[in-house]
Length: 129
Figure: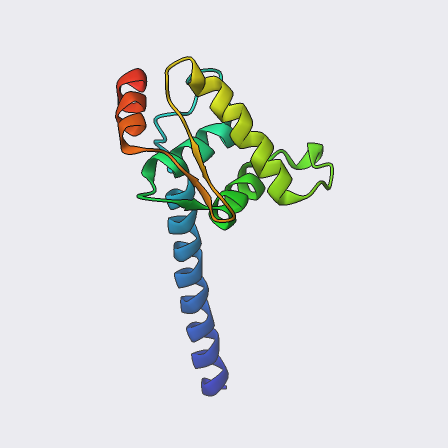
């Protein structure tokens, strides 16, 4: 019985560690204080994509952006389309919203997307963050 209790306690502690790790990963993808939420008429998903592009030094990989799409997508409207295509479409929507401010998102062929540092500075100024 003692052996079982130790194993149960170990598993409870491990579950707590994993839950905390998941919380941290979610906050990394889209923190609760994301400054882009509610700005420029963006959905939560677009605001989280923008946060990922803004906060990632260098290139935000397709895989990372796909995770944002899945995590912050509207499950009831999931049409089963290809995830990479859905990500490209959302990036296009984001580009359209940012274009009028002279802010660009560059495609890094077969790797992901990046926002140039000068455009990050423009975004910071536009959003007053």
